[in-house]
Image (cartoon, rainbow, N blue to C red; front, side):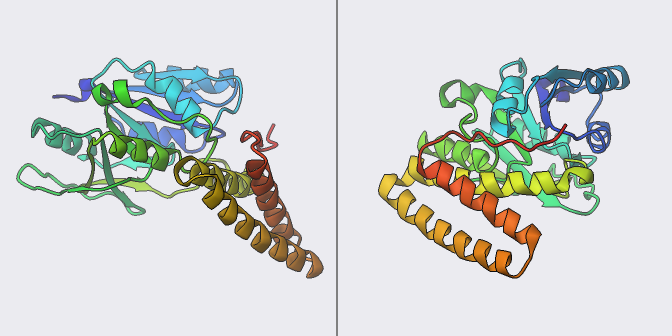
Length: 281
């Protein structure tokens, strides 16, 4: 197995200041598909001119993490794919160590690395056994055995943001497929740093709206209407109390955050799709 058996998928949105460092950490022989959630032709030209192993797909709209990754995954022709966040940086041996496990003929659907905020260590795991079977892994870096996903399918596109990878892992486990975590594969990931800081207010509102919506949708999908509704009403009560408190204490930023949480809860409760998008031009 070699790196030419791999395609990397990176979903981006206002990630111009992060993406180059991420791509530079990927072996130049590896095909990279960037799915950009806009119609930014300048960004596409920049990436494809600078990096000869990169194909940039413009969605012409902000489709979200799951749906955008699915667009990239459907174009994969290699045996394996690596879903990677644009604010993630591969350690020197990260890809080699993924393939070291592949060579051991391990039966897996998904493999995940250790997340570090420091520079990744140089680890050669020829003689190491570091795999632990788990129920789920974090979505910033997911190494997929593409053959398995012919029957599993990819991400649930009803999620716009949050819990998509947990949902995918649940479906993998339901089909008795294996998910592994490898402590010797390190990938640097700061988390929440993919989008430029100048959009932080809009992104924070989006995160709060979708965290609530996705949580209720997820609970409804796996635990039923009654359980999800009870949980949602509890979240709604807490958010209303906090919203009123911050309004009365003139904390505008916190008031807005809890307003968006309330909106996400209400929309999920009444069965509306995850329609909210950040107001970024």
